[in-house]
Image (cartoon, rainbow, N blue to C red):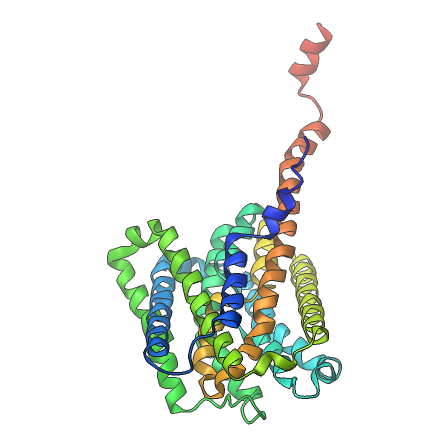
Length: 358
C-alpha cells in the first residue's frame, strides 16, 4: 500500500510542536513587559496552571498503580536508575567534551543540559509509545508516575547538590524555594491524589482537559521565560553553532540512554513487554514538569531561565520524533510475529489428513 507523502510529516510535526514554535516566535515579536498589570496577570495565571497541572497528575495516580509498582519493583528500579543516575552521570562524564563547546558567555546552556539530566521521566508520551509498541502499559503508567512523584524531591536535590554556587545559575535551594516547591508542586499533587477517591471516574474521562492544562502550562512558562530573555537581550549573541551543539548533545544523550535501557533490560531477562516499557520510560525526560520546576528552582536568575530550559525544549522534540519511529517498529514487529509463528508451526494431523483427502 502506498503511504501518503505527508504521512511521515504528520508523525513528526504535531499540533503541540507547532504551538510551541508559535509561542517562541510570539515572545520574540511581542515579548511580555517585565512588569505591570499584564505581567502580574500572566504570572498569576501560570501559577494557577502549575497547581492545576500537578493536581491532575496526583488525581490520575491510582492506588492500583502504586500496588502494581511494588510488585514489579525490578522494572521500576531500572527505570529510576536510568532516569536519576545514568542520565546525570552522562552529563558529568562528558563535561570535558561538552563544556568547552559553550565557552564565551554561553555556559548556561551546558548547565541546562545538566538540568535536563536531573529531571524525571515524561508520563503521557511514555505511556502512549509503550501502548503503540504493544508493551506493558500498566507498568509504564506506574513507572512514569512514580518517576514524576519522586522527581519532585530528587530533581531539586540534584540541582542543589551539583549546581548550587555555580556562577550565573543561583540554584541553591533555600527555605523560600522549598516553600514554593511544596505549595506549587507537592501540595497540589498530594491534594489531587487524595481527591481521587471522589473524582477518579471524572478525571479519567477528562483526557482533553488534562492535555489542555499540560500543554497550556508549558506554553505559558515558555512564553514568560523567553519574553524575559528578549527583554534583557539575552539571545542576541546566540549563534547557530551553539544551537547545533545543543542538538548534537541531546541526540547523543538520547542514543546512549536508548542503548542502555535496551541492553540492560535484555541482559536482566525482562519480558518483551517489560523491555518496551523500560525503553520508553527510562530514556525520556518530562517537559511538562521540567519547565514549571525550572520556574520555581531558578526563580532568582530571571531572564537566564530560558537558556537553562532551551536544551530541554529541543530534547523534547527529538525524543518524540525518535521514539515515535521506534514505537512503530515494535508495532510492526508485534503484528508480524503471530503470522510468522503460524507459518512456522507444523500443521495439525487432522488438517493434514483432510488436505490429502485420505
